[in-house]
Length: 209
Image 1 (cartoon, rainbow, N blue to C red):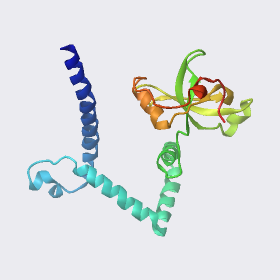
Image 2 (cartoon, helix red, strand yellow; image 1 turned 135 degrees about the horizontal axis):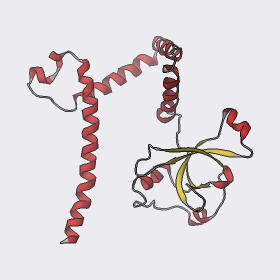
Image 3 (cartoon, rainbow, N blue to C red; image 1 turned 135 degrees about the vertical axis):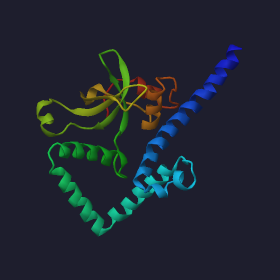
């Protein structure tokens, strides 16, 4: 009895959570239908709301924006828009920060998380998975003695929250694990263990190259 109940739970939980997340995304994107005149909405000429229309509308808006921004005139308009937002106090700091992050995450050449690492966190003797994001820059470099790397330590099961820290390169261990596998490992709270890897590399202390 207990075995069958547990099996059923393991089948339904991922399915229910997946449906819930998809519904949340669809409901959020459906808000874009408010941009259209009321007569254009299915509630007006069908008397019922059809979920998913906002998803299609959002994709269409994003696609058309990309097409327009890809030509010479579009590039000029985007550049003017960027310059305008950068001149507005307070707005400029938010916009520039978000734009840099989005460019890193979504551009074809960007790579937000470069390598999966093993670091001691939050204290010596405790280990967790982190991600290499780059190296310290700006005036920060003038105050760090030695070779340091920039590291993002995510929280579990929600890796979108975490800590940005700078650690000596010699104190982090590069894992023979893809970023995707590392994220799955973190989200599952260690339940979904990555397959493969070189045990001798994972066990050996040392820095990254």
